[in-house]
Amino acid sequence: MKRALPLASLLLVLLVLVQAGAAAGRNGYYRFPAIHGDTIVFTSEGDLWTVDVKGGTARRLTSHTGVESFPAVSPDGLTLAFSAQYEGPTEVYTMPLAGGLPERHTFAGQSAAVAGWTPDGKILYATRKYSTLPNAQLVVLDPATNAETLLPLSQAADGSFDAAGKTLYFTRLPFQGSYTKRYKGGTAQNLWAYTLGADEAAPLTADYTGTSKNPMVWQGRIYFLSDRDGSMNIWSMDLKGGGLKQHTFHKGFDASSPSHDAGRIAYQLVAELRVFDIGSGNDAALAVTLPSDFDQMRERWVTKPIDYLTSGHVSPNGDRVVFVSRGHVFVAPVGDGRWV
Image 1 (cartoon, rainbow, N blue to C red):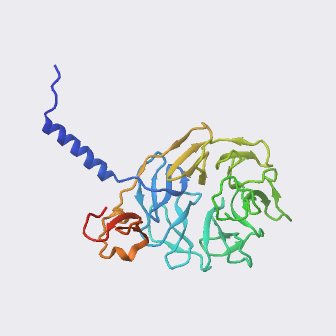
Image 2: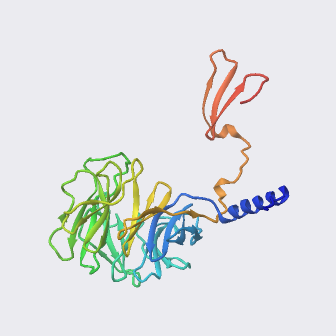
Image 3: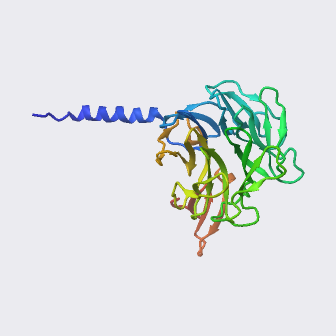
């Protein structure tokens, strides 16, 4: 015969479970994932975090008040390159993947967005430092010497090399700033291929007037994001731009910020991280929690709400006024009465 737990014991069990859940952290908003082996690095709360490729509790890598973004793990899995605002402008930094003191590598005074690594261990990043126009250009940076090599592509905004490091597959034109669905304007991003030393690059997605971006090469195919079915999803094609295939099928919300390693693509979908396995076709969301103090969520007392007044209107008979302060709507009487 089974005996029911006494009420006091049941309440104690529930309290322990609640406390365990609180100790494990809360969900966050996750951006810019970078995958390498069984590790994913991502941005949340403006800082870099690391988590197992299967999800779980994340570990904080940075804590500066500025934003750390666009992480990319070196081919040997030891070094993390990223963009950060430690000294003001967004510049390229590196640190050990396990955590440690960041080292600054660029002094452009312009936005420097890490795009990835070359197969021989150099950093690929996009900047407007060398451009006389508002266009990004790709630069190869040697982290050992800080020597830079500007790639001869005037509008290359991001990209990745093949395994031999001889051909760069890149996105022409930077993001145009609008999240308009199915954008097909004059600055729609598209994919090109450039073999080092060649006279010119070759277009790969000229057949489509919408957006194609973030190319990643794996076993003779290019994986990339495109809105060909109405939303940004992962697609692939052969190295010449043919044999098009769709791999994810999200509707409404767009996939973004993909990162590839050894046949797996980590990417962002709204606030969550997902991993797509090319071999199996499995696409799954990761359950990630942040053990953070969530300072932005603490209760704060506002002593002078009128300083945050954004709008106000008087009722038709003049006995009440409605106003908005800090995103909240209040109805107040002209004389004595109840505030709502």
